[in-house]
Image (cartoon, rainbow, N blue to C red; front, side, top):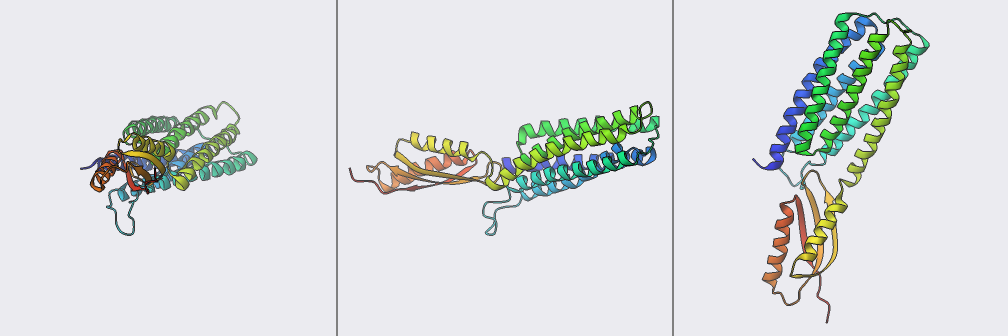
Amino acid sequence: MDENKNRSIRATIVVAACVLASLGLAIAKMYVGLSSNSLVIMLDSMNSFFDVATGIVTVVAFCLLLCPRSAAHPFGFGRGEYLSGFVVAAVAVVMGVVFLFRSLNRLAMPEPVYYRTSGMVIIAVALAVKMAMTAAYFAVNRRVRSYALRALLLDSALDVGVTTVSLLSYTISQSVSYAVDAWLGIAVSVVVMAVGCKMVIDNVKLLLGGGNVEADRQRVEALLAAEPGIRRVESVTVADYGYRNKVGHAVVLFDPSLSASEVAACADTVRQTLLAEGIEMHVSPTACPKE
């Protein structure tokens, strides 16, 4: 099994497991939120339901990576990771807006929150599970280096903060005015929207131009310039189609003393070196100028 397939399978297993965990958290939080009339906990539950949806989108994106290239998709589906990362970010923004309006509504028409020890225990356990999910995303993403997993990791870390606020709100709502439920909801919504907007901007950049292709372009140019049979690098372009799936074209001036077979061998050496780094580079010779 090649590296990309192994990477996709590993990520798919982890995300699928976290989707199931998020579904369990969503149901448990909704039970506590409805039984206690806690707005923050109900919003936290809605957030977990959306986590299930974004997790499924990410699983689909990683499953598509297992599909072979075809005539319709000659460069594969690697950029699907960028799209799923954008979906996660967009959902975070939507949830922030929902949090804000629901919190403002609760602030205008405050309602009491009913405290139960069992509810506090459930939310505390949910917080521990969410922290474990965040740690799992972090550990796996250190190996697979996926923008989609990075988006899920940031969203999960944000959810840890949301659930912490939910637990705090639920605990102090009995000793402080119940308007604290609305005020904390407003604070959470502002943070969620701010982080979500930053994630959206980052992922839009990836969708429009891919990853850091300039660094890859400079790497290709330096490797070509160091090749003994190449006199000068005329131009290098690189396009990003996902993790270790970059395609480029280089125009170079070969040493005029080289034969056609030596030029082909030189170009093939460069191509094989770059292919090992996930860059499929096409090298074209330019006409040799008169001395």
